[in-house]
Image 1 (cartoon, rainbow, N blue to C red):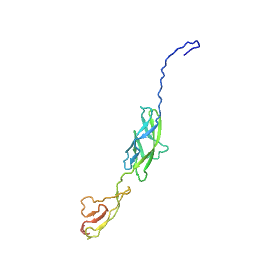
Image 2: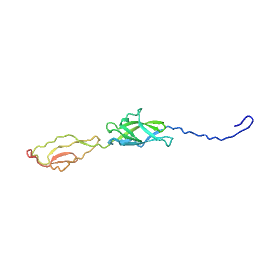
Image 3: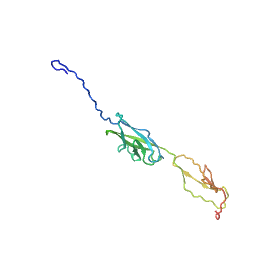
Image 4: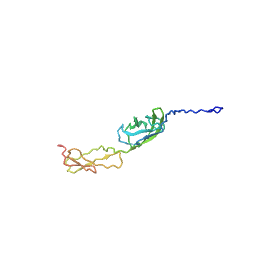
Length: 188
């Protein structure tokens, strides 16, 4: 500092910079797919936050807003996005969720994610059928064909009879059911 008489003085000062909270700037998911046959509570992804404050901690929540249509099908447990329903790829292959990250000082950031289902291998089912055979028919008489169905497209099936059944045979490729012996209505 100088006065008008030309006298000066110098002094050093320490200026402290007070750290202000920097808001989160991004949310990242470790994965954005889940298999349609995964049970409820399956981890879809680990959630992380980008924030300049390296020592900050974060809480996560699913929130209402643009892109929240699939929120009810998921849950957040700690830093994990988890399934909250059973999925069906054939009826809905994609979901959108809106996630908010909130840092320990109250700063927040929101982002919408697309979660894609992968088509799982669903169990086939044997269609309801009724078979009959006339008594005294010779062995190897074709009784009918067992049919099966599967939600997965372009499946092929292999058929077999379980247990120690000796009265019938089934063609493993076609499902053709045939007798292994002659039947007598009164004695069988």
